[in-house]
Picture 1 (cartoon, rainbow, N blue to C red):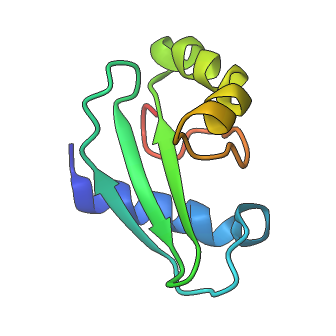
Picture 2 (picture 1 turned 90 degrees about the vertical axis):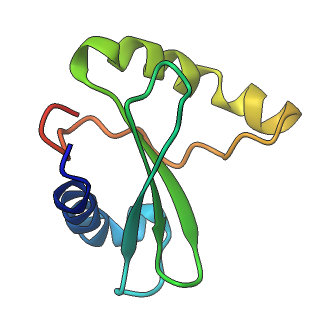
Length: 97
């Protein structure tokens, strides 16, 4: 995986989604995060310097498992330290994810 290319793809998507993601600034940074949790291949930290978001991307064949997490996100947020789900991404951002 070309991490720099993927970060630029994610950064471009985040800049186009500023309002829905709750960012206030236009200078958005995307950084790849190594995440060994079996159902997601790629995770990113997005920030405009003030607001931070965590983006999880899965290849199409693993999308149902990520969708399971999304359906239970309210419970995970309420009872554990899981981040609140802001929105589900349905488009391909990084090739194959």
